[in-house]
Image (cartoon, rainbow, N blue to C red; front, side, top):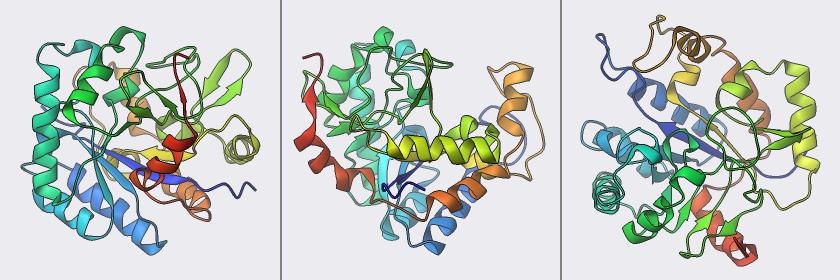
Length: 276
């Protein structure tokens, strides 16, 4: 088993926005916070700026428990879909709302869907202008979803001065797999998750290890619904096998690391500029 420390991160969003029925993300987020408390772990909660008002009590409680609050976008949509002229002000406003709710500085940003890609490279300037110290928005390598082929796997510095802490990935042939997070983590068979986790922990290359999930990843009681903007197959993939998430996290909880903001100074000191 790898003993390399792993930070715990949660992307707080309302995946049922636009659907009838109760809002479920706050209760599921509190369950994740309870899990972290039971294991003595402080994590990073990246919250969508649109939720800062209705979830202000939740955000305050998370911050009071010692967790870091980060920004998961002004809205939960792809960076490439944002207006370049308006994004800096929108991000600055979202950051300010989250800081007001949390009563703490918001240093970190995670793009919805890890959508900091070659198509949205311009957004790094908006993140720097909004005052973020680090981003955790890039999935390096090739594979499904939003990707940035050719980006380093180790933390690096954008020319704009922003620290990037990429998603940890395990190279598998020509592809790279985000073993420690989200839907991928839920669907790996136990033996595959075990050896892939060990292989990722043994890797060199300077990757900073962190795991991630969403509130819905543990909501086993939610009734199935086709989600806005998703196909039936994608909606089924997000709904099924949710019981696996906390089983995986119990294993990872044996070697926890601090929230990402507390690791950022050391990671910045070791980071190389990219592109060089």
